[in-house]
Image 1 (tube, one colour):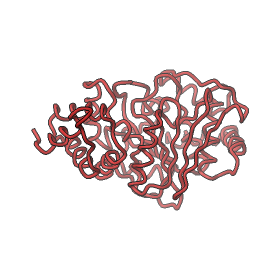
Image 2 (cartoon, rainbow, N blue to C red; image 1 turned 90 degrees about the vertical axis):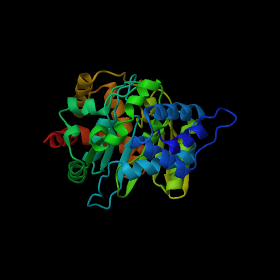
Image 3 (tube, rainbow, N blue to C red; image 1 turned 180 degrees about the vertical axis):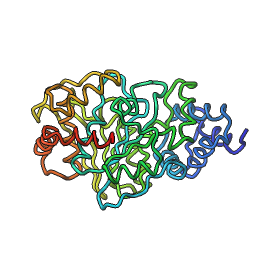
Length: 342
């Protein structure tokens, strides 16, 4: 048993009236002790559930992010002045709506935008469809790459995927606790914020609840992260919905802008494609890359248009949507998938 960790546990787990938040330094130390297994399994499980009940503060999340930056996978900067677009989505996958992030990444990469994503296998408690299963269905075995190969692919093909079990096994070691405690721990928020990339980047974090977005923004401020966006997307992801207004925050330097977007204003219906298994996702993605009309393709165009605009390739979202359509209709995006397979 770690006596030092016990003091952290006592501080956050003393109840509604007497519990206290950790300092940034304490949160970093506690996270490092959990990642390295210095804390016992009983202490780790107790801390996770107590911290969830108390709710993490932005200062605590900043400290946890310090630990992830120190011990996590590190993708070296690419030989380019371009910002890498880092898409942070929930690791526990999707159970209601069909993900468009993978095909969005392919289209953006085709347009010359370097995109980095990260995630793991099916994860408790949601056990939703993770990105890695979609990549595997498409013939992309990112789980076998070394971190150096991830960096090379990002530099050569404008796309990279960091796979948690291989590239950050210390964090993977905490996954089992999610099933044992039956709840998402605060690490689920941390995963939306963390980036393994070491160079110039623009972070996009998904969220569900407004307080989570506030904590993310404040934690980013403590880290000096000024280039980022927050997206209230499908199931906490960065995928813009069509069935409701998309709520987005965009931060450049010291300027934060709130944006609300309706897909209907850009000629799309309000239908969100339903989730399917990885094999059927492959079919949907290939069909969309062949420009075959579908509601899934409409969601792809909506998202690709937004991210092309967000990255600064167009002044108007409508023009960016047309650009996305041209990339797909020309067959360039499908060829990019073939290049990634090779």
